[in-house]
Amino acid sequence: MSQNEITIRKPFDPHAHLRSGQMLRKVLSYTSCIFPRAVVMGNLENDPVDNAKRLVAYRDEILKADPGFEPVMSVMLTRNTTVESLDACWKAGAKVLKFIPGGVSTGGAEGLDLPDLKFQTHLLKKARNLGMIFSCHFELASDENGAAIPKGRQEYWAIGYLKEIIRAVPGLKIVVEHVSSEEMIEAVLEAPLNVAATLTAHHAILTVDDVLDSRENIINGLNYCKPVAKDIRDRHAVRLAMTGGNPKFFFGSDSAPHPLDRKLGSEPAAGIFTAPVALPLLCKIFIEENGIGWLENFVSVYGPQFYGLPVSEGTLTLGEEPWEVPFDLDGVPIFMGGKKLQWKVM
Ligand code: DOR
Ligand code: ZN
Ligand code: ZN
Image (cartoon, rainbow, N blue to C red; front, top):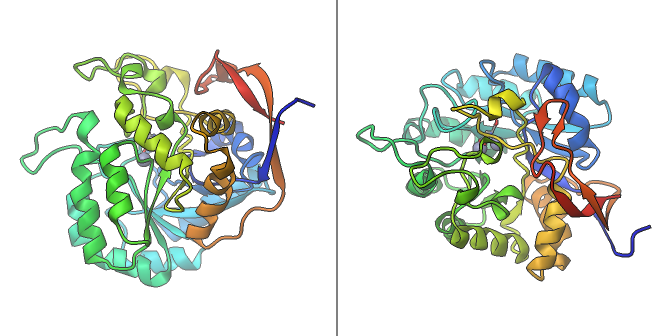
């Protein structure tokens, strides 16, 4: 037994990319052994989970790989989405409507951008009326003239669209995913109580210097995700929001595995596989920020509260016991691979 131990109720992950096929079978246990329940994102490449039939097949595939895990199913908002398809997905068990604007990240909705949502308010209202949560990747890749927005500013430029949705669809439960900037944290704080945000461990650790050079060329694909990590000021804001005990902010790993060859090279895929290291990293962050008493609420309580789900049964213990993170899981690079961590899931 290690000298220092912290025991919390089992966490909930409202933002996990588990993929499908071989990758799913490889990574699933790293999520399910820590999070008995997780919202599974359906941005499968070239095969988005955007209809009831696909949703049922994807859930079956996940349950076949791990019958003890409880996937909370999401349905992707794409150009195929209709009021009727949302109804069918709800009946098939979808709890979350998920949107990644086209062109901003892995598996974004082709041909649907953030500004287009103003023509989709009937879908957002339908989701609200069904009791679905709208989980959205708020980044804007190009301005109204079509000019590219720098990666470091794409979240900032999405704030106006968040405000527009809040106004246009009152009462819609919105999760602003993986907030990475001080400005977006402020926007979430100012928003009504039906608006919450997830925060990741990696956005509380990385800064832009770990990922991009001054011209926004990617210098380390292993640390590349969207939204991209920002500067120290933003990271500080993320850490304060995370450890401050406000129920509007809860954990969402955004664990997003990609094979090594997709993470290297000139155009690395966005996404970092964090499931094997997220809890030990959070433990260290909460201790550093003098907020360890809030860790359990952040990872296990506030998320289920917002999603209207029970807190997971059972407990998880973290012990102070240094270990080295393996570089990869069978060809899938792990966040902080090769580094030593102080805390370990026991
Ligand atoms: O970095 C990211 N990776 N951001 C996302 O929004 C998607 C994710 C993925 O699926 O790889
Ligand atoms: Zn995202
Ligand atoms: Zn994601």
